[in-house]
Amino acid sequence: MTLAAILSTLLFIAALVIIFTEKMHRSITAIAAAALMIALGRILGFYSEGAAIEAIDFPTLGLLLGMMMLVAMLEPTGFFQYLAVRAAQASRGKPVRLFILLGGITTVVSMFLDNVTTVVLIAPVTILICEILGIAALPYLLAEALLSNTGGVATLVGDPPNVLIGSAANLSFGDFLTHSLPIVAFAWVAALLLMLYLFRRELARRPKNIRALMRMTPADALNEPENARRLLIVLGAAVIFFLLDPVLHVDPYFVAVAAAGAAMVWIRPDIDQMLKKIEWSVLIFFGALFIMVGGLEAAGVWDLVVELAQGASSIPPVYFGVGLIWIVAILSAVVDNVPVTIALIPIIQGLGRGGMDIGPLWWALAFGAGFGGNGTIIGSTANIIVASLSERTRHPITARLWLRRGLPVMLTTCLIASILFAVFYPWL
Amino acid sequence: MQISKYMKKDVVAIRADAAISDAAQVFVRQHVGMLPVIDKDGRPIGVVTLQDMLTLELPDFVNFVADVDFVHDFGAVETTRPSAAALARSIKKLMKPPFTVPQDCGLLRAYALMIQHSLHDLLIVSADGKLVGIASRVDVGRAILASWSKVEKK
Image (cartoon, rainbow over all chains, first blue to last red):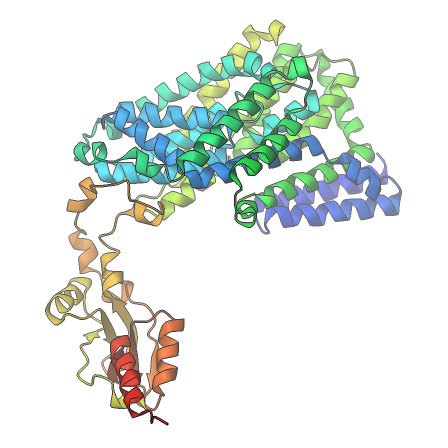
């Protein structure tokens, strides 16, 4: 092992520890560590500024930025509020139906938009609906976070790890629909049924005031109907282009950014207001992680890891994949799934260079990263958002409660993903 | 123009050992928007506004949903009441730090402070920190406007 490999590994581990202990904002840690990695590379001669820029996966950043801009424009239209009110009225205030409908809407939206945004937009209306009905919002909030984490795994743009995996493995939007969606659908139904059972006592309470719910006027919840219509047309067109990728060969990141551009020309938002809603710290976090991982790669660390992993190549590939699902899931439950995914991508690529069939492993990584986040209150950003929102209400969600309700969902979805992964392995 | 000339001297205040329910009764009887909380020496240690009191009743969603125009009936929250336990808690749980000015504070300075700190009422204290008066925006504003009649025409 070279000095470069040892020092760069130590730097990376130190950065991860600081990120996971949340001593500093993760983006600050990541920028500082990326700068140190380049400095280390210059001193020891294994990495440089130019190589660092090349290590940044711009397609991933472009796809995230494009989708963030579209959401930033869609948010003020009140479309999500409208959807939630409509769903609640369709349930006629029956708790189980309301649970399924709100969970279902959150899932569908989070398949096309970022989970965090989806939850940020749906959770407040959920609190409103539950308070007016006179029932506890807690089961519904938890279900929205858990189901959006689960549903997000189904599509290329549903979840940041998927964007990363799609870009690294050259998987299209359609690939996700044919490989990930069917397995996620099973896992999703299982998660829903399990939660209906876990929350059976809460859902048996009868709402006190259904008339008030039915008197809401969803049309008034839609603040800017014309802009909502335009943005949905643009989003729909973007999804069609995502699907036509195998025919047209247009990269998803170009589609996302072009769609955002078209939408901006069409609705002319206040650009400063809109750009404030972009999660720049997330984009910077990604960029800095890419630079760090690029440094590890240049220092030859991944070659060593790949050698180690190849020692495990005597294990049948199906078991290897199932093992990967669980390792990634457990890591993603205790830490953010983005660094886990960014760190594992080069290792899987290395295994591929070593002759292993890595096609199925990408899906194992996606399932582990997505479903693992359900396990704990800090497992995904959507969980943290829901929990911190609930802290400002009279019934906060505690870390213990999350373990009691979320962990069973994580274990069940991972188990189902493992079984289906093994059964359908030849087709993955 | 010193504020002490225009302030109300008969201040309705509440002692620090009072419960939230005691404060509620004072608000109901006295028709005030804010209650100073004083210690046993008459020094203000906090203030509690009508608005602070009503947060106990307000539903959580009001903090999250910016525009609730589409909700025509607040349903179940309309009939919820704070629990007896919540009402029995000390007023200290609800009060905020007091904002005070000395008796010789000028009217314009008093008004500017109220605007900048979004205060509707200002507490006036003596040199030894005791509460001696209270002035509302209306008290201060009227006093300033009254002085306009003395502006000489040229």
